[in-house]
Length: 393
Ligand SMILES: *Cc1c(COP(=O)(O)O)cnc(C)c1O
Image (tube, rainbow, N blue to C red):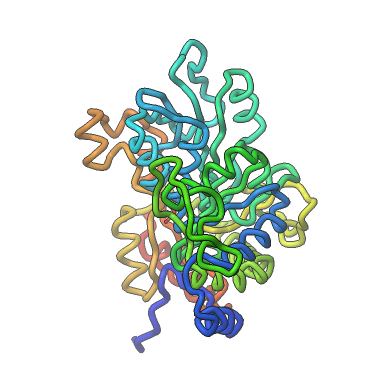
């Protein structure tokens, strides 16, 4: 067999606009937090339609600052999902607060009344498909909980006509290298609440009073005041330059992700061996959704679920077979509760969150990114189809 180019799981799309914007920043000699960060924040707030946008150096930092802003304290409880990345729960631990993991099952009832310590919910818009925000907001309003959205995958995602970033109390986005738009490392926080926005801005740079970065401009002043023990979470102008260029093509990037998802859906729809993402999203109309339309998947991830009863191989072997055919994949996620720290500290057993655990054993994330050519997508389809054909039970 002739050796074919390996198709990695993820690659960013960096074009001349990104490079020119970064060169402009380098030539300006203002390389850390400054005018480009401000410009990126303004452009992001405009895109989302949020009152405030605060840029930070990761989504993890964003989540941490959000919990600080709403006043999470030691002993408080915060709900999140086990089916997520490390960040969503570790930020709760930063406060010596307690995470309450809720399994990924629809319409399960959880007791939230009479939990005096319960203060917030961190829903995770898994893969870029929005959570049931109406129910989440309803519960939050009924029990006086704050909603901090982990929207690391959800840009741009719409829930019933509203863009993610305008629904919960605070929303946290990621611009990590694999995310829908990237700054290498970076994040953004949106909120309607000016007090929280100011607090997060201040805490993102050592708790120094507002607009600390301006002290080195002609408008600045050497004097500053530390009003709280803050963090070092500011985004650099170099990173923001990348973000400004990426944000301008966000719609185009999303369009290409959607095209790829539709190619996969079409190719896999008659294979009983795999389950493809939510059938509601098969609609060809999804491709033509605009900002004021209903629900829109960001297609950050394309996750297939193996129907193992039809296959003679398990998920690990499936991934190895794809690798042998030159296709990189990943798994989203290894549920939090089966990681050593969580098992050791909280005595979790895999079956404590059975839906997450059983799902985890069967899922594979296929490559989906705008840099993929149609030929790349075809190769993934051929490889998946071939692995299935050769390993039917
Ligand atoms: C990537 C990711 C994060 C963390 O984002 P960083 O910007 O790397 O901190 C948080 N939550 C989820 C679900 C993610 O996938």
